[in-house]
Amino acid sequence: WLIAAVLLLPVSLPRATASGASMLGELREGWDFFRGTTWLWLVVAACGLMNALAEGGLTALGPLRSEHTSIGANGWGLAMSCQALGALAATLALMRWRLERPLLVGLLGCSLFGLPMVVLGTWPATGPLVVAGFLSGVGAQTFSLGWHLAMQENVPDKMLSRAYSYDQLGSLATVPVGLLAMGPLAGAFGIAEVLTVAGVVYVGIALLTLLAGPVRALSRPLPVPTTAAATARSATVG
Image (cartoon, rainbow, N blue to C red; front, side, top):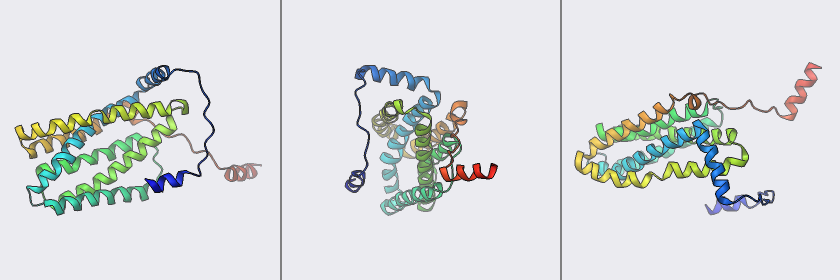
């Protein structure tokens, strides 16, 4: 984080000017935009549910399930490392692949993040968990890029910070609920059963969200041609 902060020092931004609007007024304006943008609030609501399942299931129950199976601490660490490798592999691939439907591809990728919970619940072995971990890393990174592309290219600059604020609120406010609920649920129904259901429901939420047309059909604007390319085309036409 310190290195990132140093790298940001040379970045110059225009000085902000006072708008005269109150903070509550701006929050209300942002909320009106948020609830009026179907793809935005639908994906945020879905992420709120999925984050509760992932944090309560994979993060809280995953290590415990691994400890009491053949996976063990070493297998869990290997799977989490492969998750990071999956994210790196997706990053390198997405540098060359343009996501034309950022939310469609992103949510398909996001559904892969439920696989480790399903594997832990139904097939608790190191090999399958490592594969599931790698795929979940690919999926998480794909969704991250797709989501930020959708936000940056389809939300007006004036609303962007407020849209991200409501995004963070809706996506993360449910995490404590998931963390608090998974322990009692696992005690009542069993860790394997709860992990399996959490993983299946996670995948189901990601895929069901794609049934909404505004989410599935959201596309990217056409790329703006560079000055050199535009000049070359003009010269060719002339």
